[in-house]
Length: 288
Image 1 (cartoon, rainbow, N blue to C red):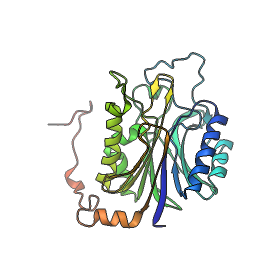
Image 2: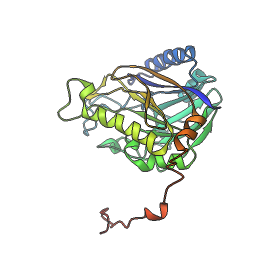
Image 3: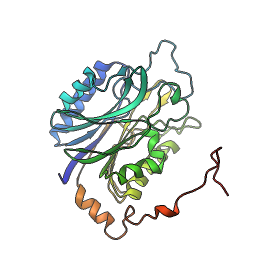
Image 4: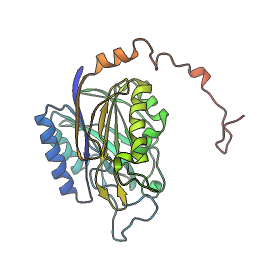
């Protein structure tokens, strides 16, 4: 498939799975009416995110995100709702008693791909184990690579997916506004600016289509910046929800967009990997 109608969601999700699924069902219905073929929901849209990133949950009786199995009834329910649409959604994955901050890609046929968040900000590692890989996979709308929130702050994440053939990068987030000196207007918030910069940079440097979903509203101590968007391979924003809940929808001939972006300066083609190796001391500092 070449021309793809895709959408990124900015919406609010909490601990109650039935309420979350009600939101998901409503958004999928809306997206289907708009002809969307690829739909990305935020990080932790099944069961909500953490109440705080400071090591304090903010509520002693909060059980945290409900752990779900990749082959469990919740993901099967999501797949049934997806039907002929390709849907990406974040959840807390339980595997052998270990919890991961994960994102799954499903259609009515089942799970097509799953990613466990690799990079964990602040105190997130107290709640989740870390993933250990980035891998692209084929879907009805093209080859996709997924990542979660802080993953996109590291150029290597998106580059690894692009080198694995990803045509569309899908990043799902629960990205909040600044923790210190927050802006009264989220549009002026410095963490929102970083969120937007990372989205545009990851698309441009890898010359891929970028779909970025994010939580909106508030949860615990966190106020999310929303700003779901679709970005073309030149780093231009095609659709954006701004700081409000909504659906950012864009249609793009993916193959043509990639070919155009890479025609003169192909960032993947023109790499010089033999020059990039750097010696690193055990402590992590670059060698002189």
